[in-house]
Image 1 (tube, rainbow, N blue to C red):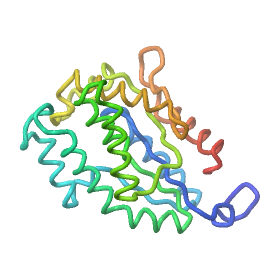
Image 2 (image 1 turned 180 degrees about the vertical axis):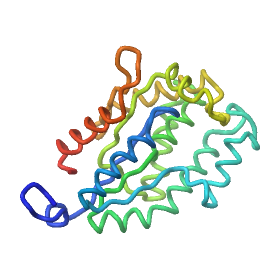
Image 3 (image 1 turned 120 degrees about the vertical axis):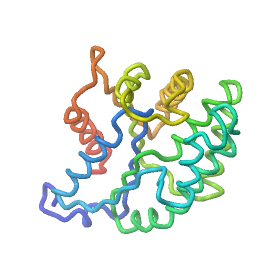
Length: 227
């Protein structure tokens, strides 16, 4: 229920697509879970997608790619790799559009920007703009997946995210320190776009508490009239 006692459906006629982005180890899963719990308690209609979806056909190919079956980070062409991730989103697009038309808040843990950041990190800054534009055309115009209403970047420097992942089994992306630094920088650059908001998750060299970050997320969503 809203503050005025009206249902969520009377306040919102069309849903909103909210995406959480950030490098590996930035806390996306945790912050998504806190938002999901918040929406559940208030009976606000929502749906949740986490990309890649490793249990789906495209996701299974992505898993093989990340396990190094097709080569190292530098050996797999970024254009070919990006098609795998785009294919996974394409097969989810029909359901996402249905959710949006039903007035739901659609929460995505990773979306097109992850494809851009992780693959553009391979091509170098001189080709990055061309590659970024190609991915956006391919996903939004060719595949016609819905565009994000809001992208929340959980900003965590690689030196800290690497420590958080120290005990985790790492894929070919996560094992390459220089590559992760490039990915982080691309995300930081993307955060300047109009529909993005950057959340600094580190304060005085330490990771902020999830509850504190969650509170900031809610404030942003309220300011954007999503909640």
